[in-house]
Image: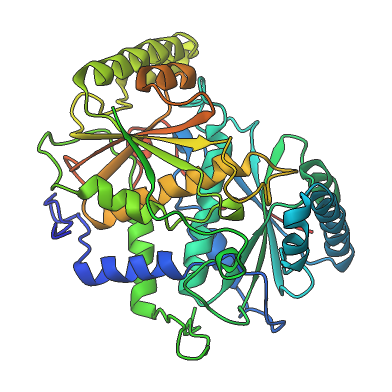
Length: 221
Length: 221
């Protein structure tokens, strides 16, 4: 792609060059869902900095519906882990017999070791944005919070910090454990910390659970 | 953040430095929801390259549920635009009188001018990933497709290509117009092209519709 990425606009425009584009691709390639963390803490302020960057994510109607919960209390962390273990046991129980052994071998969460844990919610009741862009697709509120999570993920990787998104949880239980307002929809529970190792291929692919497809599905209409 | 971003791992690890982190922040700052496009076409292969990068996005259980539809047919584009115009008129009709004039002044889509148009769906029926991570949160399939959209957005901006996410559409109508399988859930209709101008603040903020909040909502639990 040889486009210079520069549109003249009274000197305000921000160009990006081939070198940056190559590094951005590296970032996408090396971003991983991390489940094995070192226990040493993150540098002070790391999570707050990532939250600040997350607020640069796109949001429908500029609604900024992302809500963050930094989870430090050992009792609440233990309750989250208990909920995860129950959900994971349920998921194992419904695996067919060909997959159950493989499922049992996988590690899905770094809840025991990750030094930082962050839950992200979407506030469906927010009036910010005045409903713009939400009438036919109210789920845009959740999608906006997802882009904030993805922003955290990429920025963290650029800091050398690994992120794991835990979805084997009951959303209602998480809301109760963390005592958040009823209108906040649970989006993600993130484990953050330094990864025990880095890799450029997904853990699930290396472990033989699933593989990437060689070509995307693209229709032309 | 002074962390070097490097974890030793048999020479495989990928470090990122302060200069890259600063440029990544620039990318987040200058990414915009673009509604005013130049009509000149994108360089050949641009959209396909962006789709390739989107496939590096995270997906639940490595399910890769993203499905792409490149929309070139003028008849289908016109049908999308008609649906948008009806949804937009409905949204204007329910604005309260204080906001209606402001709403009517805004431009929400570049459907007339954008040289490239791309719809993104999430295949909820996919067996890829074997259901991993989806039992308690089936919406993770949609969220995975959202991270693919966000990847396209960031990569496009690094190419100097603007993206606008149109959500003022009826999902069912879009599926019908584009003749996609029933199980594909509509996620995003993206307009792509060179922006008429670049900016580091949201159009909705500049136009006075909404403003960014100075501080994020962060609870500590």
